[in-house]
Amino acid sequence: MIALGIDPGTAACGFGVVASDGATLRFVDAGTVRTDPDRPDAARLADLEAALDQLMTEHRPDRVAVERLYFQRNVATAMAVGQARGVALLVAARHGLAVTEPTPNEVKVAVCGNGAADKQQVAVMVGRLLGVELKGARDDATDALAIAIGALYGGTRE
Picture: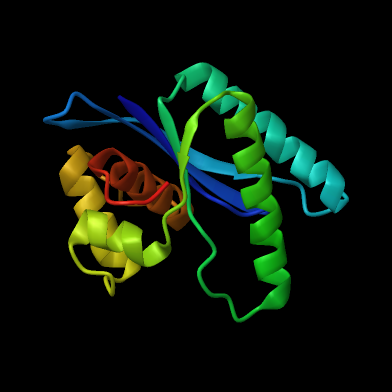
């Protein structure tokens, strides 16, 4: 099974692709889709849609996990994340994929066993679980890998 995890954002949208044979996890791909801040919002969302469509076409995941916005103090950031989430959900639906929408705490519990784990703890566990070195990786890519792992472990709701 292949899972695509998405840490949504308009400026920077993390993605992580993880495969599982039921016993072991394998790193496939990870990175960040970045959009040009000088472009209008609609154009940036179209760019994000095209990039996510390409990722889903290339990796052919069995399921997609898009992190749910749980709480955000900054309203503008929450709006941008919400828009990016909508684009990710739309692209997954177009591809006919099963989608889970975990909260950040659910992802942390699935990967670390602790919903209060910090970003460093999550990164360390993701690296251990996948057997890869994540030094220098962007937080959004590491978070997206954690989201994908959570989807494969079944620790997140649909």
